[in-house]
Length: 575
Image (cartoon, rainbow, N blue to C red; front, side, top):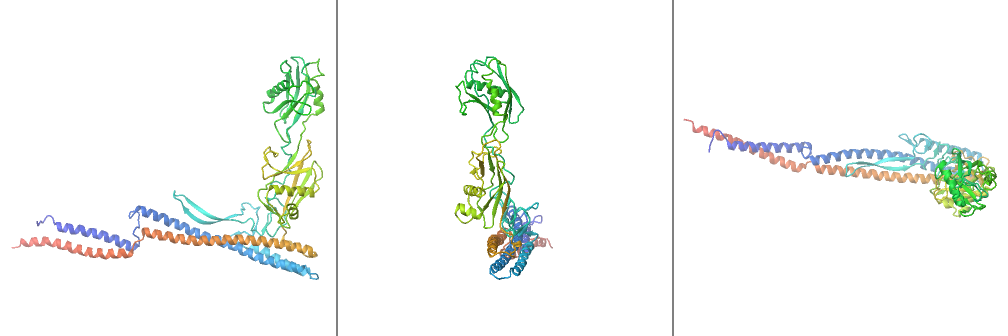
């Protein structure tokens, strides 16, 4: 049907042309930008994934830069160690020449002096981006021997992000350390306890060990339960572990004087009423100290403090009784107090060496560990542990102490060498307590004094750990061939430590290089993955473009033909 109101063919052609133009615009946009997904409206899920991956790839780019910075820092220290090794080789060569008879040691020392200065120069100038690992001051605020190089950026399934690092322990790499308590590889010979692990965690004097028995006070020398009159009282002043003194009063009854045990219970009840339970125990004992709950004569009441250690004490004084008839019986308590004395005695006194020994300790030929020891107020003696002593005691010949048991053997030999008697060395087994009442751990050592009086103690102090020789102050002028040979050994030891340090840094540098290569590959892989998600296939889009352009031309022609139909209708009305 022909109509002048509605041109169906034109409408259809127009709609088709509009759809073609829309598709053509999208294709042209993909070709011009290179992306098939350029905005969230194109594909929200893929756009979100690609945006996150692009962001992560930027972080990986920063990781790559950090690895480059870390590699340069490590390489700077590595090169410094290599050069220091070369200089040490030269010093060892000069020292070897100096052992020859007739050489001018002064001139050789002049050459060595210049080489020593070069070692200092190498260490001080091995700096990259403000980092110097060869010349340090471990006592400075904020110093940390643990270094880290950012090496990875990882996004987990739950969306959290992890930053990985390659960790480097530089504690055994420094050639020089300004800290007077520690030493680097080349400035040994300084004293201090910071070079640690060795044997002791504290340089202060050890205290009397709390393994000492609690304060014990024996009271009645002769107790007869038959004569003390009912209703009469026995009273005395009692001080326990420096608590306020309390007046203890016990009234005799037929029941509580039936036996030594019942009388001890009556006294215990009176003590508890003033001090509380658990502070002091009261038991009936024979003269030999064994408990006797049935005897009625020659029985003693023994007071024992629940507190152990040097501060534990019991004092009894000012005995009195209201039984004026039988003072010679239980009244013997008064004499017993005076005989025993005012303060409690201690049956044992161990001094502890609270050891930090938990890992193997190796002493080189020029290493020493020393501390002073005073026993029972006597003269102080120096106890020294050397590689020679370790080797002669353990027989291995490597200067290595592998565990606390071996350290016990070495310390025992060191005490004997120092002429100290009456003191034994023990390894904590959980049963022996330290001065704070805590069990001494199995990796800690303690000293036990054979003396067992209240004044017995072993005092430890002046700990020093000397590691190696200061290579930069070594002087052969006037030294014998034997002494120079010892210097050669010291330099050789330093060489070994420098070689080990360089090997450590070399391993780290190799790992950093591998990680850099991996990060490069990972970034490329992520780029490819993002491209697969959002990049347009240009061959495909160009083909679509050509097809859509032809379709657009056809659409225009179809619309033109449809519009001409109305002109044909008009021609029917012409006269």
